[in-house]
Image 1 (tube, rainbow, N blue to C red):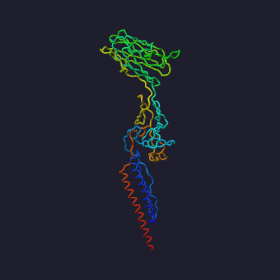
Image 2 (cartoon, rainbow, N blue to C red):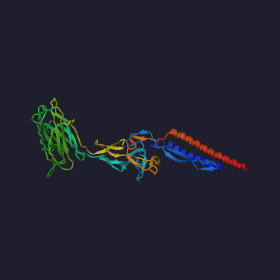
Image 3 (tube, one colour):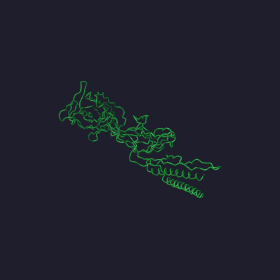
Image 4 (cartoon, helix red, strand yellow):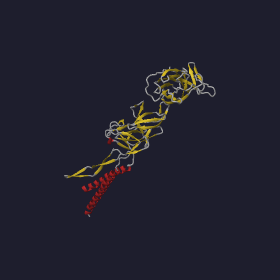
Length: 464
């Protein structure tokens, strides 16, 4: 009887619209959930029955809910590891059981082991490690623990100077054969810092001494050392009380004409073997007051004994450096400044930057920076086929297809925005309209049941 069928139709309407109301309620409840994707309720009709030539439906049911993957607005953040995706990609994460999930909620932080994990749930962010500028082909959990900058030994120093020709020769001499203080044996000195291959900083002092020969200067470089070594073995340095524990690394002379033109040069090496040091270099001069390049190559490993290489000075064309040497009498004393040296000590990871391409770049305490990881983004052939697993996570299914991992900014995956968080894509106004629709449909279905019940009651009363 069709009256009974109307009861079942009313019940189905209550059930389906009640479920749809739950979908909208869930959307509204998650309107402030990071990167939440709203759901939509999809209805379909139930089986129909045929009464004569008339087809009568048996109500409706909730066929499915689909997910709207439209992008949410971005909110700003103060953390570089808060990431939002401008595009259609997903971050790849995994749990402790190595199960892989995909998410748009890009709030990450470091755990106790230094791994980048989701702020909620602690799932590990996957990335490609970069070594010497080359990214690996296997996605592994990103781990920023125990990453240091490799030390580099200094090889070049630059000194800017003006050597006044009227300077007088100091009364004391320093020949490098004894370990007495060099102070008082030079006109002026320039301190500097170099690094050995172990990353240890070494203080050096370059002394400049005016000679009795007109327009001629001597220079020598000293450093504090613990011992000397030759082919016979190691000799401890035992300076007299109050004397400096220093040794000359390199000495030489430069001679200028009265107009500043270089006349001659010579290089001397005070010792042939010294613990873990070697010195060499090049220099270039032109006329007085003009630019002059002067560099000195220094190599040592901080551990082994290295022989000195013969120093060869190449007085060729000037290449144009800001480190200059001149001989110009401007009425002031000679001056020199330690401009710079290359090399660096060991650096610990201080902070990171994350580019739009998903490159994690480390900034180290020694001023060095380098690329550490590349964060891939996943795309799917059918994104609506992904399965929700809660906590803003999705899993791949047969309907979604296998994930395709690739670099951010490629093949429509989108770009990564650091210091940003994607907000929910819930449209509150739309959800309120849906709630009204579902509520009215629920009430109408309930009214259908009431009407059918009244008709049945009337039928029962007919038999009395």
